[in-house]
Amino acid sequence: MFNNDCTTNIINKINELKEKRNALIIAHNYQLSEVQDIADFVGDSLELSRKAADTDADVIVFCGVHFMAETAKILSPEKTVLIPDIKAGCPMADMINVAKLREFKAEYPGRTTAAYVNTSAEVKAEVDICCTSANALEIVESLDADEILFVPDQSLADYVAQRTTKKIIPFSGYCPTHHRISREQIVAQKEKHPGAVVLAHPECTRDVLELADGIFSTAGMISYVKESSAKEFIVATEQGILHRLQLDNPDKKFYSPTERTICPNMKKITLKKVLWSLEEMQYVIELDPEIIKRARNSIDRMIAIR
Ligand code: 13P
Ligand code: SF4
Image 1 (cartoon, helix red, strand yellow):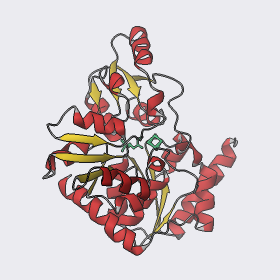
Image 2 (cartoon, rainbow, N blue to C red):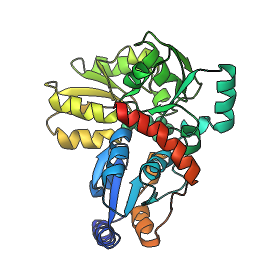
Image 3 (cartoon, rainbow, N blue to C red):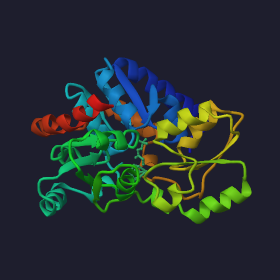
């Protein structure tokens, strides 16, 4: 832990170096509070991809997990994209690789394949289109196909399947953090806070989603809460989002279903590591140009729709 002077010192150094390198710091909604606070922009996967594509900065310091930084690189190949901890991966994204994807596709030949952005660049390069939690249903609906392979998240696939007439064939991946949230925990929180609105991320299991008043991406939750007249919310997603929700809505109360809604990988990025990243210009996200080109097609098809 740092004392306050030490933290201020680190923040000042980060700001100096940010200017010197013409860098933009972007952070996912699940990042540690202090990392969100020094970021130029905080958002969900879709917003961060867009921000990375739009910026004039030469360097993007991506405070999130590896697939997100790769997505920024795919969209801005001419920029230097840094991730302050190379080990900040996404276990769900790691549940599928190119070999497993090819096997899955071979089981269902000729089908269109949609990939959640929580996948490696190599996997994105081998699918027809990408989607995020904010646009998955619209992306699936836009496809000129009745049967769609959906990788890697079985829960997001199920969420979409419940809302479309198309046949969704899910891969078996899942988010360990969201799957730690149970129906019983939501029921217990509702008993404690009877008037609270339940918000859930579509990476949660179906039995949890059935209890939700609203199902959103992290950015969707932030906008919903701002507009809502409710005063209390049970938030079924990674608890890093509570920082932003509380900052934006000081008069409202937020509860996590369990203390275990922590994504350890999201918490690997610290202020010290952000500073180190800018000092050493590490870790640089490097991708094969051919993979970038093919993965970009899948992301561009998504962005063209939403
Ligand atoms: P969002 O796109 O909703 O921010 O979600 C990303 C993610 O990794 C959720 O676990
Ligand atoms: Fe991956 Fe889940 Fe962490 Fe999101 S919360 S980055 S899906 S492990």
